[in-house]
Image 1 (spheres, helix red, strand yellow):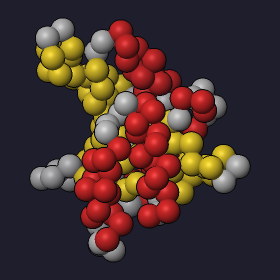
Image 2 (cartoon, one colour; image 1 turned 135 degrees about the vertical axis):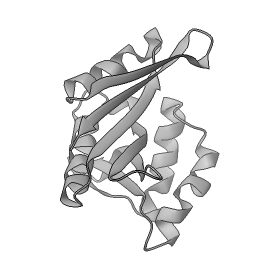
Image 3 (cartoon, rainbow, N blue to C red; image 1 turned 135 degrees about the horizontal axis):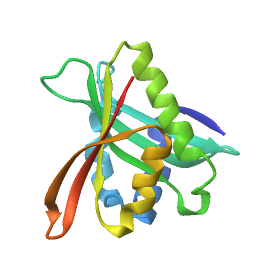
Length: 152
């Protein structure tokens, strides 16, 4: 497995994974990735994980405005056929390495408090993220927003 910065050639695979995992509609991807792909000074980070030259996972991370060294991982997904392979952990590890090398302080990520996201919350805990906050009924009635954090 290899983890690297994404390129424009990876966008179809990222869109396919986003659609398969229902993370976001693939048609949103061109606008989401536009700054990263078209602006050499973009602060956004898009990473992909490849296995046998096939993109099997990705993440999208941005700096939090008005903070000193805090970043928000807005998207992390692994193709369902490759979940459990270590690709998600490899992506997160590479992201943490990049941010640490840039002398950044904190990485946060939001997820849902529903049973459907219990494996997601378990993933972040296993990767040494701490549950920092919970906003009840944030996403919908009975669907809390849970924020995890990791000091870099």
